[in-house]
Length: 193
Image (cartoon, rainbow, N blue to C red; front, side, top):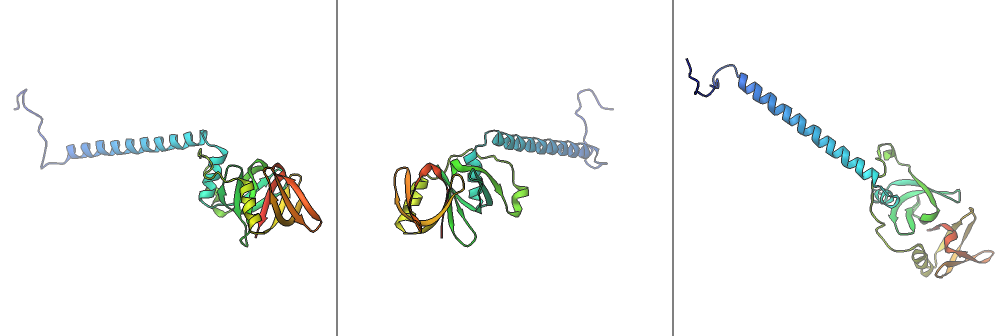
């Protein structure tokens, strides 16, 4: 008979009842930890969606070099691979290698077009544009290269020509019909090969 001050005895050679109880307790703790970890991850994703920004979402797409369709207020969609986001424009590489800049103020939406689009999470980025190069600075480089460009303006007008000057808020384009001066805020997109 055991006395009142004796410790409980563990059956080290018996049926393992205590071992089973300990194992069940550890299993419950592991399940609870997994549930907590999933809840924390879900809460983090929800918080990221709540603070998402337009530029952050665009950066997420550009970092993956996602195939996209950029919708514009000129009723023109530009389809290509999003490779850059700047303070006032997006940079896309089109099939065939052409580069296109799309003015961000003219952008009304961006849709992923590749097969991974269905599995893409909702917008969750909140970071600023990674480059401070402006649309006019890009066009000035193309001017220096004497490149032929395809220009789309608000309203959907298109012109093909060579950039002959880039000012503070205007570009001048030599076309088959003469020189066209375009205010920078009328530019929707410009493509160069």
